[in-house]
Figure 1 (cartoon, rainbow, N blue to C red):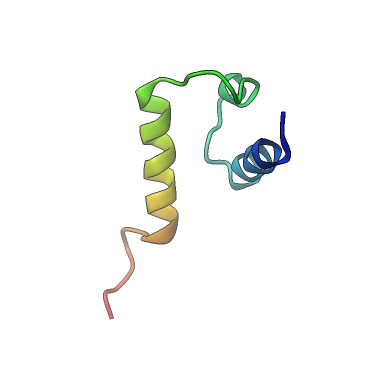
Figure 2: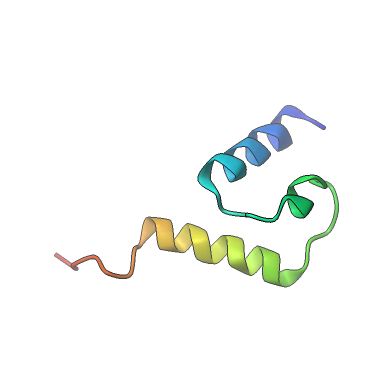
Length: 55
């Protein structure tokens, strides 16, 4: 596994984005759509929390 993938796996684990270790053990394998959607949702929630004021 190259350095870029190792760095991404390390970040995903440290941020707690994916909680199922089954998907973290296979970085080259295909993941279901729901896993990708869950990751995107978690990232959006981190950058734009739902209960923040607009101003």
